[in-house]
Length: 186
Image (cartoon, rainbow, N blue to C red; front, side):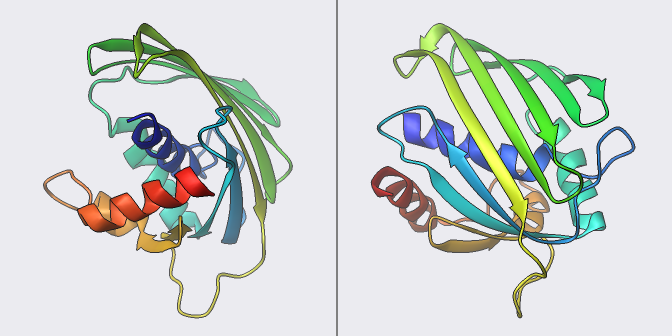
C-alpha cells in the first residue's frame, strides 16, 4: 500500500509542480528526466521521462490542482526561482498535510522537496519525505508526443489518462502492478 501511495504522489508531482502558468517559471518544451527519491529504503530512487510542450504542461497543471476533491486548494507563495505549496487532504481516514518547496534552475531544471504528515498514520507512517530532481534533456524522442511518460518501464500518455470521463486511470491493473513492481525492485 505504501508503494501505491508513493507512486500516486510521484505521478502527481512529476506532472503538476513545474508546469507553465502565469504564477510559475515556464518549463522548456521537450523531454524531461525526473528522478524521485522517496526517503524510504523500501522504495529505491526512480527515474521517469516526460515529454511536454507549453500546452500539455498547462493542462497537466490545471488538472492536478483540481484532481483530488478530498484536498484543499493549494496555498502557493513565492517569487523568482522558489515556490512553496501547502495543502491538506482527507483520504483513507487520515488527514495529510503536505508542504512542498520548488526551486527552479531557469527553464531547464528544478528541485522539489515534499514533506507530508499523516494524522492518524497512514499505512503505518506518520511522515513521508520525497525529493525530485528534474532536468530538460533535449527534444522528445521520435514517436513521442506531449504527455507521453515512461515510468517503471511502462509508457503511457498522462493527457489520455486525464481525459478519461470516469475520472479513473486508463492503465490496466497489470500495468499498475508492473509499475509498482519496478518501483519496489529498482
